[in-house]
Every structure is written in C-alpha cells, then in structure tokens.
Length: 165
Image (cartoon, rainbow, N blue to C red; front, side, top):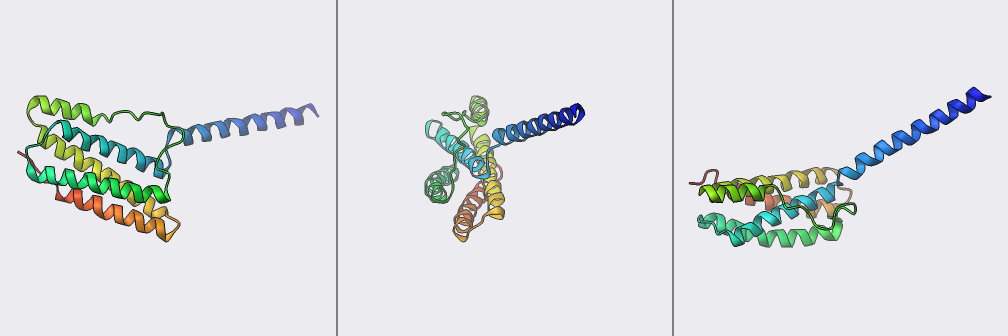
C-alpha cells in the first residue's frame, strides 16, 4: 500500500513539474499576434527615429512617410481581428536595440545606409510574422487583413534601395 501511495505522489509531482515547465515556456514567448504587435512597435520606433534624425535620400524619406501611413492603417485593421499586445508584457516596451545601432551610424556619418538596412530588416520581420499568422488563420476575415498587410509591407521593403551612399 505504501509503495502504491509513493508511486502516486511521485507521478503527481512529475505531472506538476511538467506543467510548470510547459507553462513557463508559453509565458516567455508571445503568441503570434503579440509577436506581430512587438514587431510593429519596433517598426514604429524606427520610423519615429527618422523624425528627429533627418535622412538625406528623398526616396527613402518618401518610403518612410508611406510606411507611417500604412502602419497606422494596417495596425488598426489588424487590431479589429487580433489582440496585438501580450497580456504578460511589461507596460512600456523596451526600445529596440537597433536604435543604438542607428545612433552609432549617425556618429560615423552613415545614417542613411544603416537606416535603410534597419527599416528593411524590420519590414521583412513584420512580413515574415504576417506570413506565419496567415498560415494558421482560421477565418477569411483574418486571412484578408493579413494578406493586405503582407502585400503592403513587402512592397515597401522592396522599394527601399539595396545600397545607399
């Protein structure tokens, strides 16, 4: 009887430990929509950076302005079908590390090329997350919103120059 009781307690402890490990993994990784929200927030920080640090390339400035408009529009559409914030996240999102890289590039006199690379990388990160979410979307309404956002952000990334002087 004692052996059966000890085995049951050991099995229960094992189940609790597995549950804690599985739950802690879920808390540290935001859901697809929350991950997209984080990427959009980082994109917004990069776009905001150009407001106080003017760029020289007028084509890039135009893409930045259009990206600002499209971000506002698509984010509003996405928020109608998804919750883009992680309920377990801190109240204030951390500033993306890329901002420090942009400051360093500015000090070296190569802000435009660094900014173009950072903006392209962030747009492509958003595009990749949209693609992941599209594959698991459960309704036509979600798929439509995700596809529209994907097409817009992909086109903006493609319009950025591949090299900047």
